[in-house]
Image (cartoon, rainbow, N blue to C red):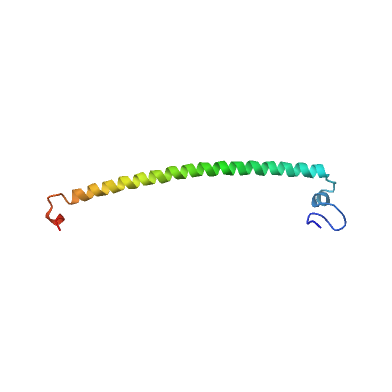
Length: 91
C-alpha cells in the first residue's frame, strides 16, 4: 500500500489531518500547481546559471587581460632595473 494511505481504507494524509475528503480532481489540481511552480523554479535556476556562466566568462577574460598587463609591466620593470649597458646583464 502507498505510504500516503492508511491500511483501514483509501484515506490520504490530507484527509486524516484536515478531516475532509479530497477528491482525485483536487489532488490533481494541487499536483499540477506544484508542478507548475517547480517548472518555474527550474526555469529561473537555468536562467541564473546561464547568467552566472556569462559573468564567469567575463571575469576570467578580465583576469587574463590583467595577467597580460602585469607580465608586460614586469618586463618593463626588469628593463629599468637592468639597463642594456649594465655590465651585470652580460653573463
